[in-house]
Image (cartoon, rainbow, N blue to C red):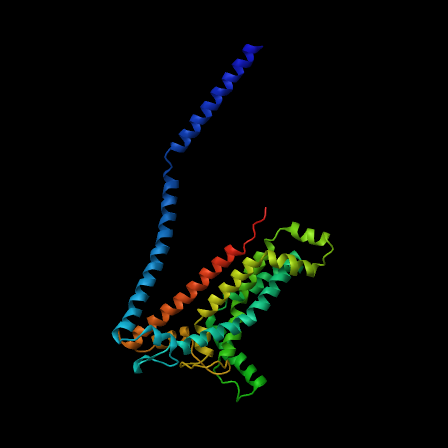
Length: 322
């Protein structure tokens, strides 16, 4: 009996050693297809990094020429309230404030509507209703922005002028552009927020119901705090999208820098100014030509800061469930 047990142990040991050798041989066996896929993925990652570095280099190089050629200072660039580089006025504040104001109006529209629709789709809508409404909502993201621009100019502006008066609302104004921008970024915030809410475990909801909470109390006090990181990230990405929007503000907000905080007046945003000036007859290495890169570099760092902040928020407030 003891001999049979010993023989069984030896056979099992031999099988284990044989399996380990086969496994090590399998890993050492050349896999050219997987190596090619790995190299291709590495190439894609490096290409995206080098593309970003190239964009920053080219924009930064031309922007430095703008400051070095005429002796302009960074202090004047961020403190003056007039933008006319050909006359020596290089204050970006008129373009910056109009960009922030239109984005603020857009978020006033997109945040409550987007979060409300996300809560409905995630917590209240039946599967059939969700499967029907979500694609319809996401159709808004596929509409060209130039269509949104003409919608703001031909529909939203007359509506605002009829509500507040022709003397109060200019034909080109930041309010109509901001409102339509909010409609444009609504699908982004709604879809990302709905994904964050749906990722909250069902067990948290059931525990809340077990303690006697209503569905509304569960949504407000349990589900929303649990999905806070995803909702905040969606909001910041929406702001970044609004800051970088071009066609809506170019068509509806007006042309010409204007340092004002009245959203019913016309003012030109950074993206709108770049679109208007770059479409004209600009000579290479002129002041106006180089000024476009200074504005573009400022816009780049704004969107970069928003994306970094979104990443920090996601990591800071992220909840991990098992």
